[in-house]
Image (cartoon, rainbow, N blue to C red; front, top):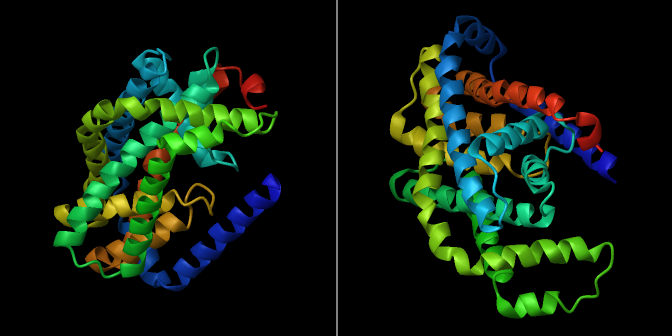
Length: 306
């Protein structure tokens, strides 16, 4: 089943990329590729790393609530390994992999719960930017904006269910088996965060700052294309792209990311340059993946791959 799922993801990614390339001018694309100054990737990678470092700090806070006390440096190591997994392994799994590493010797279920809450905090920040975008921007691609809103609302609804006492009681009435026990343990670990809402709210400014750092990456890269991106628009559009990339139907968001960039940034800098910008944005993540791969090799991959 997993192999079939991976094959479908590859097919969907290739289909989306083919569709995107049919919508751009090949001559203009080739000209833009040749004229791009790729040195601007350097500040892009630095900003992306700062965003990941801040994300690691937020994750560490939630891990400590579950009595999983790792240093910031160790959490960063696990986060980078997770990025490598998300970009290069067929099944992806950034969150699952970093939770697995953090939970070794403690509780993987607790680490997964902390990682889930960490991700949820990030979604709240995306919702914050979407509200501002809805007020100040005329979103031309309404369907993409609508999909993002629906997705976030669905996650918030799921959040309400997971923290409801009646649901938790119903869950724990389910007979525990080898299949259900890990799931029940994981959801119970999430439920234990019910009393930690003040802390979750306190991390919201940090989550908003993290999204801002991600949004600055295309801005500092765009001068390399010869067409700087408007600051305000980019800050509000990139959170939509980051959310769309999380839809688990492609390999590492490949195809979804490029399509979203072309749709949202195409009117600002042209479709061809928007496509190149999406690939450069992806490269900033790949650069950190190389570091994650090295850390993965150091950390006994023959044991962890299984």
